[in-house]
Amino acid sequence: MIGVLGLQGAVAEHRRALADLGVATAVVRRPEELTGLRGLVIPGGESTTMSKLAIDLGLMEPIRAAIAGGLPALGTCAGLIMLADTVLDGRADQEQFGGLDIVTRRNAFGRQVDSFEAPVEVHGLSRPFPGVFIRAPWVESTGPGVETLATISRQGVDRAVALRSGAVLATAFHPELTGDRRIHELFLQTCAGQGSDC
Ligand code: GLN
Image (cartoon, rainbow, N blue to C red; front, top):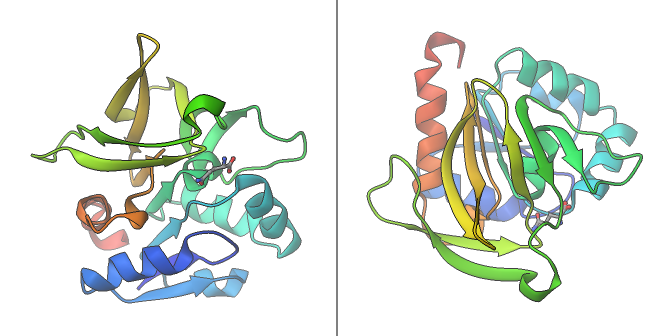
């Protein structure tokens, strides 16, 4: 059973993607719903809202602890922000679950290209992935142990937009808003790679 954090955002889309791969999901809105999960998806949406709701519902600490303890996690767009250890251009009171040793910048691509689609070359995938970027963050630096799986070039600089560290996988784009299930498959492989703990 894979949990999908159900506070806000593209919850149904992630559940549909995992259902397409034959995986049962449960919506997580309360701390006790984390029990027994083999992975947790944190959807795209709005990280400031997600942070506020997670604090209000008592989910911030339990999810932090679960991810720190090795629970596999997939975060997309706002979900990437929620997994980042450091967030730039966040709200002052915004908090994250953390677990991914990166510095990310919210809404980084700027107004002119608020939303765009671009093919993304992802390590381990044989064909480019259709990247749907909606007020997306980018990643400005990564710590040791973080593998950059994909970058896109902006103003002559390569920005990381897909990353993996241990059992944590994150994308700045929205695989749940496409019919392409390969990022979700990668996540399920990450879970399987964790052996009996996962
Ligand atoms: N800009 C949003 C945030 O800061 C993320 C956008 C998204 O998930 N599409 O949370």
